[in-house]
Image (cartoon, rainbow, N blue to C red; front, side):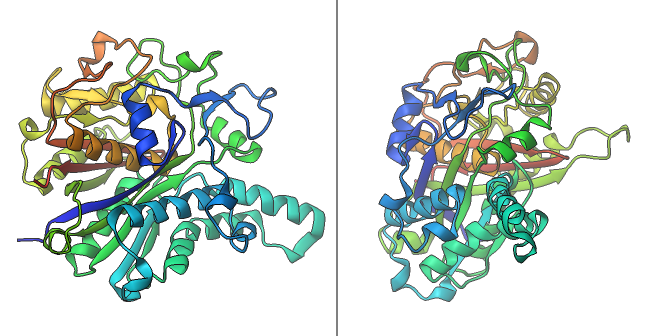
Length: 403
């Protein structure tokens, strides 16, 4: 029997709350963090709303030495890591570095760093690395900075599979725990709210250009017209269950199942692979569809993609067969940080016995989904989290109570 992997620490930086407690309180109060961009003037762009992390002042959390070496996303990740360790009751400097692994994901964060490098390139010439090199390097920055800062020398990785990357990181971290690494830090903190990043996001054609924030991000709604980007995410401390209990750690829940698939080539005539990812994750957890109490949807708010996700969910669970929620309607889609934030919400929902809401939407009956639009006090003991990435990535994670 494979070792059980549990979550003992959570660190959150989200657009509707800085810190796990603030994020969860805002989520249960249906408080949105989506508003007009403040980090630059968005007036000349067709899309002007995003989810920005409020009240974050890097110098209050990090040393002055670190600030010139990092960008906004890396700073958020370093702080989320500190909070996850503290929540788990772990002091990394008191552990053997080879007993600690770091596995994180990134998708959009490199744009801000690349913009800074381009500005340097234009002003000072070939002394500076190219933008392409800076992007390639950035994807490993969060993992590298976290490992260096905390002396973590165990098996580590930085994964890039767009919005699905955060779940892939959790799956890989669970593998390391099963192989014998005592502790892993994993998840994703991502986003790039900067002019260069914003232009790149707009090129996808999936960004909402709505005129008001409460109508900008409407998954599974007849008025859906794209999503709102955001920044932030969640990081977790994972441990083997028996070891965590032995040291008296609080356990939020178990990472019970994980799977990833890749969609077939467009025009091949083969169906999308999201349903298979869900089915494989359930099999990995040793659970049947009726054992899942709530689904945290990917929720792109692009009608065709919403339809494909709804079809996958209804084919596995039946029409309106399981509650479906998308609390990311309060934060925007945080790229590789979005699904880890959903995992955090799922674990907190299991802890507190509530289902968090999807805000602002009127579910279209054609999707045949039981969308949670207000808090439900039906206590969940398990949850499925779904994520998809641009280009065909699909991932699914099952979490359940460890009690």
